[in-house]
Image 1: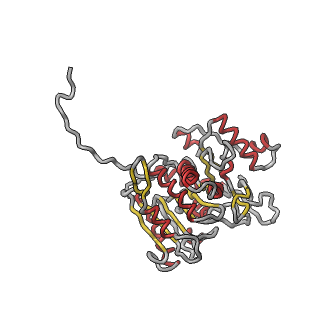
Image 2: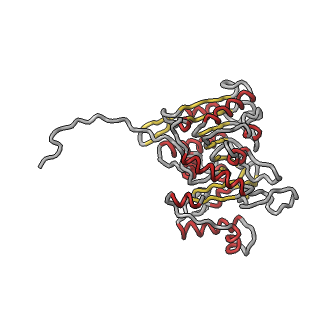
Image 3: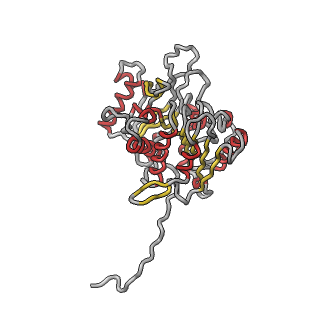
Length: 369
């Protein structure tokens, strides 16, 4: 992976996390040591991208006696108003000042083995070199939960991204440009129940998609109580082209579950060999749909209008958009809990739209002495 990025113009340094502990914390595991090192790298190496390679749990010392190994610890903090302590990896790269705004582009490959690393690295390289001739990267899927249990008008929030507009350079532009094919699967309107929705979602993923957005309720391992998508479904994915997942929901990015064998849906998708997702921008905590909407709007504006195609930059812009346009301080927990499972330097395979050709009159002679 380092060689691949170096060949494409990045200056890459591979750092053994134990060396970080040796220098910054007397050899002992500590997320604060990692943050101290990244602060040093930010100021002295002008570091832009940070990729953490390895999974971690909330029980790195195995007090529970059934916890998986921690390779790179999560940055645990009391950031969620309801859940309390959860993974706030965003703090690894919130360097300047005391605000939660990230100052570098951070991602994590949640690997529990060298085989996991190989799978995810191979998928990243395949993704960036895959042909787009089949049109897979024109497809964007929008999935919405029903309104049972409250939580917000999920259809409206999803429609606001799929069909909505935003001000950009003095004009109103569609958040999803017209060149893309949008598909909606809203429970129970476009699919009657959990089983039919799940089948349709699996089919759409297997056909290939650039982005998959989900708005609604979720748990760590599934979307909605009807299990519109769950960990068992991941085994049915054989897609050749991998989407970026945008689950605007709770807990799906809870990568730091301790028990051996447990993983979140986001982890399962990005670890999946021969299918699944290339990355997931997801939450390790709870949250409100109204706050998620700001994040997603910022992500779409970033990739389609600001030419910030690297997913780490797009995720950071989503947080910046939330910070600027949402009520002050109301959704700061989302800035802390949303993390990228994937490579922040990955460049999205968006379609570069061709500007409308303008008619020009040619007057001769065009060159005179």
